[in-house]
Image (tube, rainbow, N blue to C red):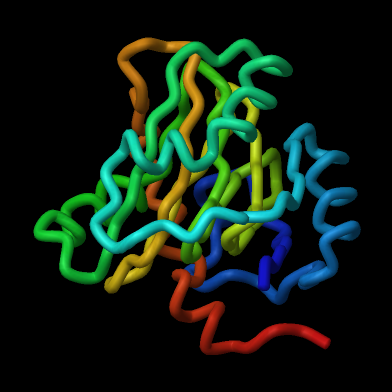
Length: 197
């Protein structure tokens, strides 16, 4: 189940905690998640992840299975480039990819994703807050350009997401060099903590 955790985070690097403070909010209620994210300029929706993808499905098969959802997003946002990323626990580059995505970064365009399998953790550094959102199959998120963030897929990743871009080069990041991610829980930590009531 999708879950949002919000922390207050000091703006000054000197005041940053070694460990995160207690959460201000923790919720798995879809409407509450949508409200909280919308208040911070982040769009979030839950759609049915209706297509069962065969093991080893290629990018073209994944895009074809979700042609209707892709057309909807492109009609609303005009994203000409779409791809699919699918990672399994045996992916040979999983460790290197995880470390790259775990470094705080920004993009010059919105980061738009629709999760069609599995789960991943989006961490958004917005002002003096850190928002951690566990996205699962059926979750669609649009993070505004310039938002500081990082992503954890866990040590044994299992997810598939559609990625929408204005940039024909696809995923291009500018890393901030801020070690903030090391002060916050990883995907497995949050899953082990359990889902709130």
